[in-house]
Image (cartoon, rainbow, N blue to C red; front, top):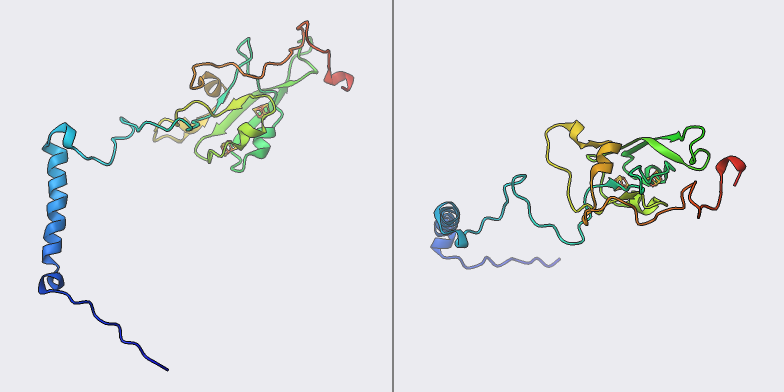
Length: 195
Ligand code: SF4
Ligand code: SF4
């Protein structure tokens, strides 16, 4: 079986001693440190930002943290169908559906979320919840990330928090308005009547 001898690269004494390379590296490091600490502003080349006091500008396609959209009267557009929580791979959405009161125009027509919570620490920001929603009730178009905090409870967004966050364009309402019960345009579909 043939054997091969790997030829050693020709190195000078300076290469072998590593000292010139170390000196060059240190000069680069301290030169950059000096410029970044004491040099003119336009020559500073700091690669990091002082997060959370400073943040980088996000790309236009950045989605951002969730929000719940509103109906015209300010109530959640969500009908508590649980499609989003079912689709969520991180299982970080918790919803408690409730029925509208007897006598309410929406009683027997659709439900509302009594509790709607998203654990933003468990969320992987996949957007499946937004895709799954049949009502345009949940969106990730806020353009902001979850504010930094040391406390876990600050990352548990409840219904009121989710409703209070506007979209990037400053709006809260859904782009998918429905014919609400009581509207002249409402077709009269009623869950109680078996439709
Ligand atoms: S973005 Fe993905 S992980 Fe986060 S809540 Fe929606 S479905 Fe769950
Ligand atoms: S946000 Fe949309 S998908 Fe989730 S429960 Fe409400 S209506 Fe259903």
